[in-house]
Image 1: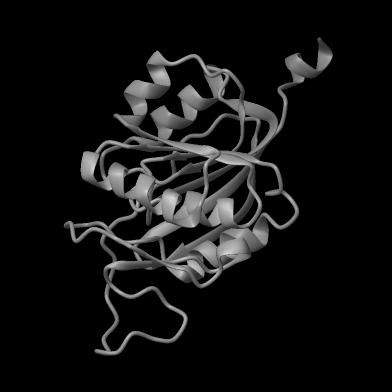
Image 2: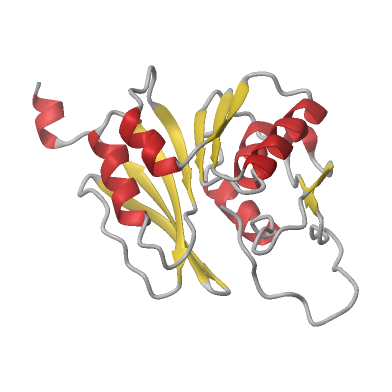
Length: 210
């Protein structure tokens, strides 16, 4: 999910930063493309700096990736992954209008190998059996609702993750969610009121022995 963040003190948007009401793809095939964002309270693309840092961390891991963007919001994280070489993405967003705009933005970019689900992320994870595991999960739940730990638990327990998958988790500053013990912290970043972590999943010892 993308949420309301502190605004710039200057009345002019800095260069190479998404303007209010717009989402800018910052790398890959659709670099510099501007896409609309709905004017809704709390809805704002993940900042350019955070997206750039995340995908620098994932250099070499995106090509052909199958991506799951939970609490998708504007879809900024998943769209960026697709622009940079991911094979397909599933966007899960509970707000119907926001979900419909992600669909429109995918069509604008000519991306067909993706789908948008208008549903509650946790309920969907609990009620769905994945056909194929995901190699990258983007998890940015609403702040202060204690959704991060349950999501991580379900992702690990219900077959959503490929053996060597990557999980991006963004939570409010000061929160230390519990993650499965086979998720190794790879990198982390503090930006404003959020704390972003990138985990690399490995097979459990029991799985390797089978």
